[in-house]
Image 1 (cartoon, rainbow, N blue to C red):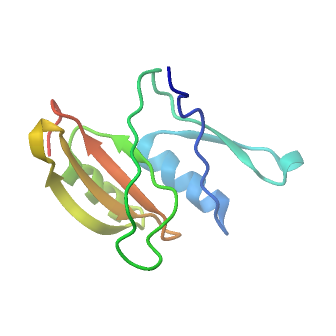
Image 2 (tube, rainbow, N blue to C red):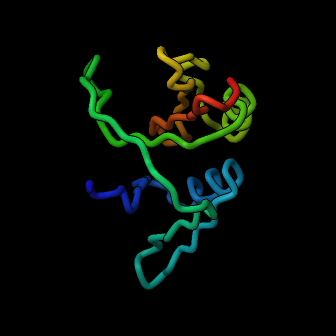
Length: 124
């Protein structure tokens, strides 16, 4: 049995702004604690379940780093919502081969790359 991903972290020069961004976009709650220097614990309000992951090559200088994908039902609608909150569209909704679903990507207001995922039964 492998080790599951237990936490993600987003480091920002303006963590309050990004906390508001992800709260409005995905309904997450961020509880910043002044005693921890403003570090906020995130509650995604999601059910436990399996988490897919992968390791891939770098395609250009500067594209390495941590990325995560959030499951959504409509890639285009969620990309639009992210853009409305200050994100930039990076990858249009794209179908993956062999029925693996589809994905899209955006850069959050700090430039962090974030993926959206619609599984095999999701929409694009």
